[in-house]
Amino acid sequence: MPGLLALWVLHRMVRTQLEKAESFSIFLKHSSHFGAAEPWPENAALYQQLKEEQILLSDNASSLAVQAFLQMCNLPVRVICRANAEYMSPSGKVPFIHVGNQVVSELGPIVQFVKAKGHSLSDGLDEVQKAEMKAYMELVNNMLLTAELYLQWCDDVTVEEITHPRYGSPYPWPLNRILSYQKQWEVRRKMKAIGWAGKTLEQVLEDVDQCCHALSQRLGTQPYFFNKHPTELDALVFGHLFTILTTQLITDELSEKVKNYSNLTAFCRRIEQQYFEGHDKDSSAIAARSSKRPLLR
Image (cartoon, rainbow, N blue to C red; front, side):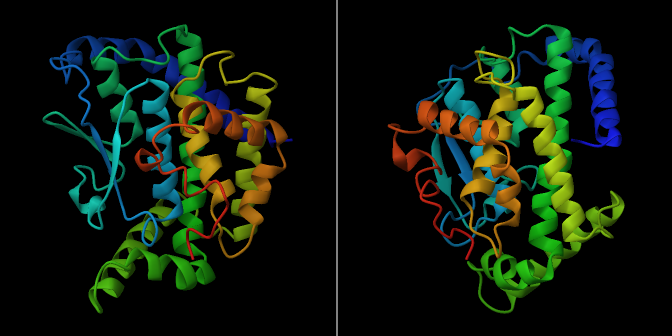
């Protein structure tokens, strides 16, 4: 059962999102012209790092979340893998999409970009539900994404055996080491700023468990988090949980936390079947993951 602190944080997130709702609606009215002039093109592309030898757990999860969101919107996108995708991105983060003459990175801005083109998964929700959805998305980013980054860059064994070799793999020595250490310094500085630097791996795994418990409780027996239709929350949760479940790390401790919740694993399988199986295998990152092969080793 999640601690009282976790529940209080989630409650505060909902209240914060409700307070933002009115001003956010005004923002959308003024920005609705963004990318709306042209329909969704057939040659839209999503960029990420090299799939087999370079991309790390957190970026893999973020990329899959965007792919799932676009699939749910029935918008075609071709996945293009580039060694320098992180440096091509306008925000320095992957994935990013190239649609017409627009380049947009990360799930949140991509959701708004797609909304401006007339495609939305959450229009059927009322303001309270939208605030709740955003609060759970914030919870996933604050807990699961941060835990993935911690594992990649703060767990010494993982850093030496997986992260450094993969992150710098496209580049020659000594550039590969320089880039890896530079990224590690950036992430560890962030961890210190948010109070995660002093955590043990066991504490991080407990945070993951509490997050999964909260998600499991919200999902219940529904097919999606808001009953019969998926939203961007479903895409985000799927991206992270599916990637955790299908990525081989040093140990299975992280994936076992997710496997403790049968409705979450069933949720991942449901989205995989509905939105990825039978689709163009070359256009999604999911095909190579379903067999639980060692993507990060």
